[in-house]
Image (tube, rainbow, N blue to C red; front, side):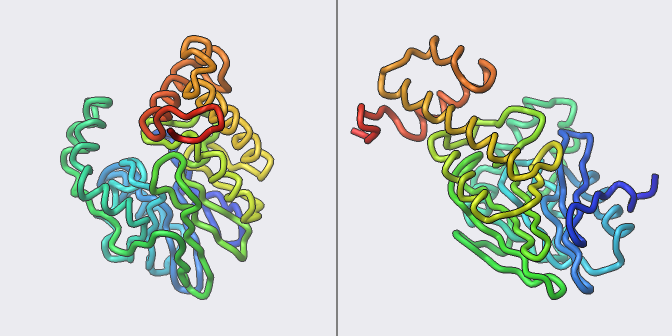
Length: 276
């Protein structure tokens, strides 16, 4: 199979590449003489493979790179793309500077077989940042970057290709696996998904897994709201952890992780839902 054949066109000149490793999606938006890439994979060799496949897809100049958030599998390949503008949320850049090495160590502990590849990574934060909204011009095409609120992390952004009706959601949406709550804001995530749906994209490319339509995202928003409500019940003392673990929309370990993060990010709340 040729490198170009691995790209799936999900909208007019908007492509996604689904990698077997971590079931990760990377995006490409092709304009007139310019290209934007969404996320850069986990280490240099993976990023170089992506760049080779991008060159097979189009001869146009890579002008923009976007990191959807600060997790290693979406941005540790940045060093290969420094010839382009690398965009991300301000918190993404800040966290890669202050906690990038800690993240590297934790990933190596989680996946020691990747230690050599990850140890060689030169962590490169985005050099173009924003806090709420940015609009990029990519070969005559308008691409909007939006921070819609906290969810999977505190620095999630979405990439909206307006003329194609396509949105890259990063890990705010994940298909084929439960959401990851290790750095999440469980009580805020549902509202962030509602704001994403309000943008009206016809096609949503999640950070991992298969492409979704709005109904697929809406189903995830319903699950996230059920998880948030469960967390509130535990934080108010209405429900024990043990009872909550068996009553959530996800498996036990995912619910446990969400409850832990809810405590870290909010603390106890009273019966009205307010923080004491």
